[in-house]
Image (cartoon, helix red, strand yellow):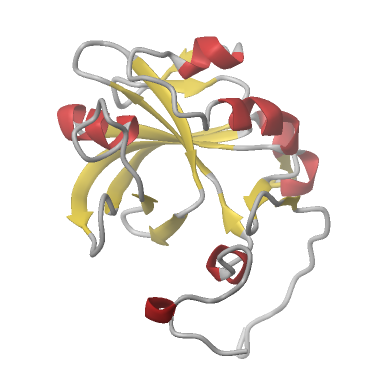
Length: 201
């Protein structure tokens, strides 16, 4: 089949998210200027540069109590910092719990029964049980086309790695099975890893 998005796809569910898969999940923790904490997963997430290390995530909807965006973007606008927590297979259910449309007063850490750990380079909590976390300082928020679409870019200023997942000096993702987002309500985990040498290496 072929379709132009402006004309619709004619399928029971939008296939776009299912085509662009798998996508890593950025479990974004923030703290508002009032000291309230928030935690929410975003599947429009990735690393975008090495030096300095930078990441991005995109928020694509809004809540009525956040003036055209969601809690994460609103908090980052106020404070300029956030943490990306990596989601393991073991954390799948609590991650899903934090994805609900909770009001801005809700602390998703408490809602999901997650222990907080304080970041070192930014004033923000992180998920203590996450296998890895990236402390970030905001570099730019880009307004994208469409309603409520925002791209958040941040520079990584601190990196946490659980030593249990380091093997021979390398991060062993098969030891915690990172979760990825597919289309619809589907997820997947990384269970098989193989290496390829680039030409000329």
